Length: 275
Length: 315
Image (cartoon, rainbow over all chains, first blue to last red; front, side, top):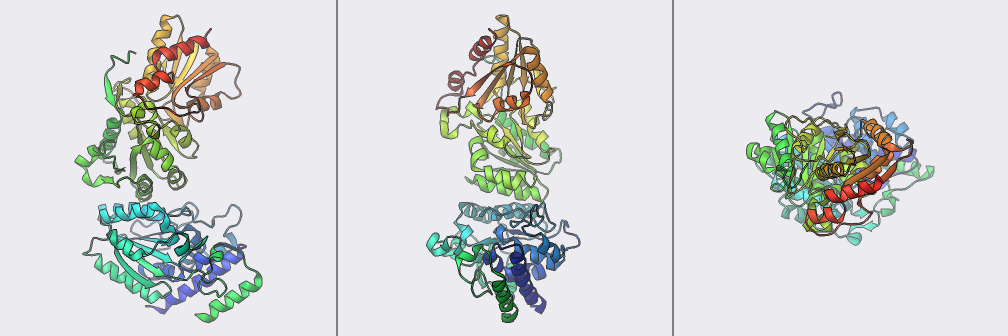
C-alpha cells in the first residue's frame, strides 16, 4: 500500500466535508464513510486515465448511492478529472454542473446518473456483461449503501450477476448501518448481508471500510481469484457514517444536514488531527 | 379493408425479427427478456446470436437498468416485456436512467391496448402511451401491423435516446406491404377524405380503415391519418391541414382518452379554427377481461362502431 492512497483518503474526506459545508449542507454522513473506498479505487486499483476519460478500456465505477456525489466529485477532482475549485464553487449551486446526486451528463468521470437507490447494481450488470461478451478486460465496480439493499431490485441484479458469471464485477457495500429513518437493523433488518450474497452465488469478503490497505488487498485478492472463479464478488465494507467527525459519527440525522461555521472548524480540526 | 379476410401477422414476432435483422446487418444489438424470451420472440435472436440474448427472469426493472448499462457501453439495447410492466413498473427506470441520459434503450412492449384482452385489467396497458409520452426525450411508437412493427423496431436503433414500441399479442391484420417505409414522426395519410378526419394509431388502424369503407357506402368521405409515432410528431401540419379542411376530428385509440392520442390531437390543434371533436377510447376508466374483439366492441373500436360515431359527428 502506497502512503499516497492513505493520504488521498484523508484528502478526499477533508475536501468532501469542506465542499458540503461550502454548499450550505448536504449528505455528510454517507459521503464521509466512503473516502477510503474511493481512494483505493481511484488512486490504486482502477484502470483509468483522467486525461482520457472516455477511454474504452477504462474500468467503470458506479456510485449507486448517488447522494455520495460530493465524495465522488472530490475524488475525481483530486485524481485530476477537473479542478477541486470547480467542485467547491459548483456543488449544489443553481443550475450546477455538480448536482448533489451525480449526473453523467454533467461531468467527465461520472459513469451513471444515480440517486434513486437500488439501481446501480443493475447498471453495473449491464456494463459487465457487455465487457465479458467482448472478452475485454474492463472491470466494473459498484458502490452501494447497506440501506439501499432494502430495495428488491438489488436482489434481482444479484441473481443476474451470478447467472451470467460476471467475474469482472465487484460490488462494494458501504455498510455504515444507518439509513435516513434510523439504524438499518431497526428500519429494515438486512443482515446478514455477507451470507445473503453468498447464498445468491457471490464470492464475499468483509473488510474494515476505513482501512485502505485492507480494502486494496481484498480487491487484489478477488481480482486474482476471479481469473478462475466465475462468481461476481461483493465486499462488505464495515464503515462509520460520518466517519471522522465526532458529532456526526453513527448518527442517522447526519445523513443530510447543515453545520455551523464553528462545527465546521471543529470538524476540520478533527479530520486533520486524527489521521 | 376487410379485417375478417385480411392476411394476418404477429407484431410480437415481427419485433423479434426486427432485432434479429439488425444483428444480421452487423448492428451491435442485444435483447433482454424478463422471462419473456419466448413470448416476445427474443428466441429468434438467441437462435443465431446466443450471446446477444439475455434473460433476467421476472425482474423488469432490473432488465431496463441492465439495458441502460449495456447502452452506456455502446450497445443498442432492446428490453422486451409487456406494455403494462414496462410502462408502469419501469417508469422511473426509463425516465431517469434511459431517457435523461439519452441512452439507446429500446422497449418492445407487447400485449398493448386491448390485445391483452382475456388476461384482464392487470395485463391491459391502456395508459402506457400517455405515461411514456410525458417523459422528455422518449420516442413513442404504436405501429399498426407486423410489417410496420418490424420497421419501427429497426428504426429505433438509429434514434438517439430511448424508444417505446407498443406492439400487440395475437396475429393481427396486415395493412402494409413490403414496399412500405416507416418514417418516424411522420403521420401517414391512408385515405383522403373531405367530411371527417379520423386519427388513429396502432392495431386500431385496421378497424378504422374498415370503418372508412362503411362510411363511404353511407356517403361520408373520411380522411384516415395514422399517427404511428405518438411522440415526437414531426409533421403536425398534416393533421392541422386535414382537420381544418374537414372541420371534424375523431380520434380512435386503444388507450385511455386521457394522455394518449386524443390528447396529442388536442395539443396539435390548439389555436386552430373551430372544429367538431369526438374521442373513442377508454373514458378515463379501466378495461375488462374479454377477447380483444369483445373489448373493441365494448369500447367502440370495431368498424361499425367507429363508423356510427363518425356519422353522428357528420350530422
